Image (cartoon, rainbow, N blue to C red; front, side, top):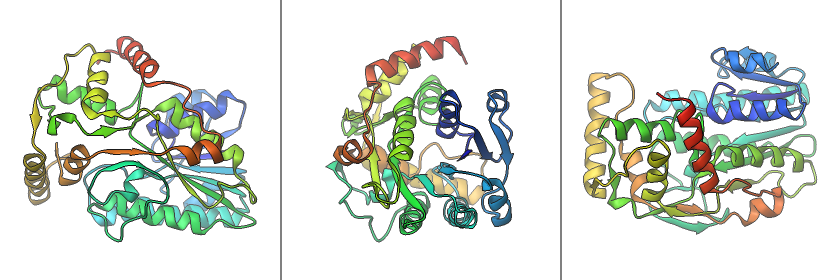
Length: 330
C-alpha cells in the first residue's frame, strides 16, 4: 500500500492515478472526497493532517508515503500556512516512525531558496535564506528541513522541488492564466522577459516515481533535496502565451513595470486583509516578485541521482493541453 497525501490536488491526483496504472494499491489522504479516484480503486481517507491521531490512522499499513498535501496559495495567515505545511509534516513524519514506514518522498518547492532576486541556473548548493518574504516558502522550507533531518538507516527521505507545474486538469497556474486572460485582467510583469522553467505534470509525476524507486538507506538521494523542471528555460511571456494559444486565445501584450506590480500587490493584499474580502487578491507582493524575477535551475543532480528524464517536452505538453482544453470547454 502506497499512501499519497493531497490526492484531491493536481499533482497528488495525477500521482495516485499513475500508481494505480502500474498496479499499486493506493490510499489517498485528502480533505474532500474524490469520486474519480474512488472509481479507479483508490482508497480515500478524509483527514486533517494537522490532527496527529487522524494522520497516524490514515498512514497505518503503508509501505511508502508521498507527502504532497500543502497549503500552496499566495494568500493567508502565517498560522494557516504553519498548520498545513509544518504541523502536518511533523504529524506525517511521526506517523511514519510509529508504523515503521521505510520511505517518504516529500513535495517541496523551489520557492524555499528564493530570496527576492534572479535565480539563473543554480543548483542545490544554493542556500535557503534566513528570512522569506511570504509564509508559504517559509513554512515549506521548515517542512523540508524536518523531512531531510528525519532521514536515517531505518527511514529514508527525499525532497523534490518541482517548479511551476502545469498541464491538462491544472486548476491553479494554467486555469488562472486562462481565466484572467478571458476577463481582460492578465498582465505580464516587465514584459515577461525573465526566464522561468516550468514542469509538465507527467514529468512531475515521473520524478516522484523515480525518487521512490531510487530511495533507500544507502542511496545518494537519501536526505537530499532536488530541483525538478522541464530543463527548457523560456521567457515567462513564452510560457504564458503558450497556455493562451492552447486555449485558443490571443497572446498577452499588456505589461506592468515590476515597481508598479509590487505596489499594486501591496494595495490589493492590504485591502483583502482589512476588509476580509473573499478569495485571493489578484496580485500580491510575493506574486509580483515571482513574476519580476528569473527562476530556473540546474537539473544535473536530479538526472544523476534520481535518473530523472523530462520525457514530455514543452511543445508536446502544450499540444496535449490544447487537446484537453478542446475536450473540456469551460
